[in-house]
Image (tube, rainbow, N blue to C red; front, side, top):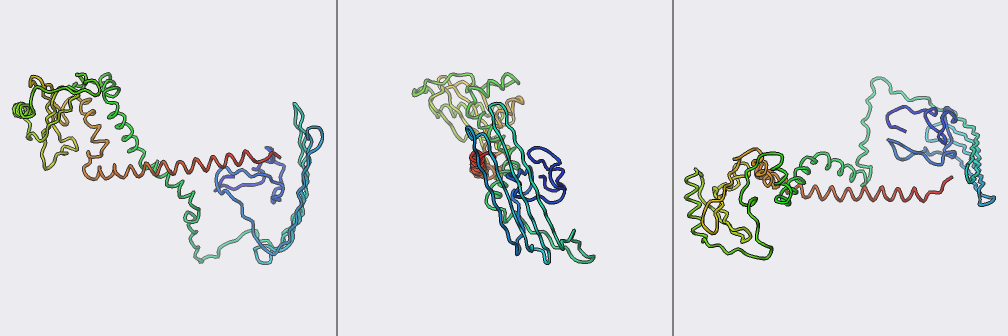
Length: 344
C-alpha cells in the first residue's frame, strides 16, 4: 500500500498473484499478513452494534507432518459506526498444503457474502461550509516518531559540520603521520621545524642550552626585522623538540585574523638560530589549508558564535548516537519478532 494513491483490489496480490480478490470488499479473516510499503502501519475497523463469531482451526498430519489444512469461518451481522448502516458478512476459507522433499503444493479456497445496506457511497461538503483543518498527527504519534524525526533532522541539518569535525579531528590527531605527508604530495607546502626535526624518544627530555630570556630576545629582534605587528606574548618549550616556540599576538584579541591570530617564531634551543616562522594566512594555499584545521575544528574561525556552535555540536552528536541506537534496537526487535512468526 502506498499512501496518497488510490488502491483497488486489482492492485493487491494474494499469495503473490493478481486478480484473485473480489473487486469491492475482502474479509480481513482471509488475510494472514498485510505488508505496507509506505503509509499507515495499522488498520482500524469501525465499531457498532454488531454480532461477531469466528472459527479458526488448523492441523498438520501425515509423515513428518507434511500435509496441513486450515479452516476459517466468520459471521458478522448488525449496525456499524455510520447511522442506519447495516452490514452482514458470511465467509468461509480453507487452506491446504503439502510439503515434499523437492516440491511444495498449496491451495487456498474462499467464499464470502458481504451485504451492506444504507451505505453512503460518498460524503460531499455543501457549498459555503468551512472545512476544518486536519488534526496534527505528529503530537500523537508516540515517542518513537519523535525519536526518528530528531535523528533524521539532526543528520540532515548538521551533516556538513559533522564532516568538518570528523576531517579536522583526523588531520589534527594524525598530522605528522598521515595528514602533512599527504598534503605535501598533492600541493606545495612549507615545512617547519615540527615537520623537519625528529622528536626525542618518549619519556626523555632535551635540555636547552639557550635560556628563555635569550630566546625571547632573539625572537623579538627577528620579529621586528620581519615586520611583525604584535609583540611577544608567550613562549613554549616542551623538551621533545630542541627549539622554542615564541608566540606574537595582541592580548586584547589573541584569536584575531579569523581564529588564526597567533604568529610564531621557532628559535633553536642550542645556538639561537631562527628555524622558521608561522604567520596566519601566509604561505602557499596548502600552508593556509593546514593552518585552518584548528580554527575549523574549534569553531573560532567564526568567533564566539562559532565556538558556541561547536560546543552545541557535542550535544547534537550525542543525540544522534542515542536516537540511532533507539532506531537500531526497534528494527532489531522487529526482525526478531518476524523470525518467530510461524509460516502458514
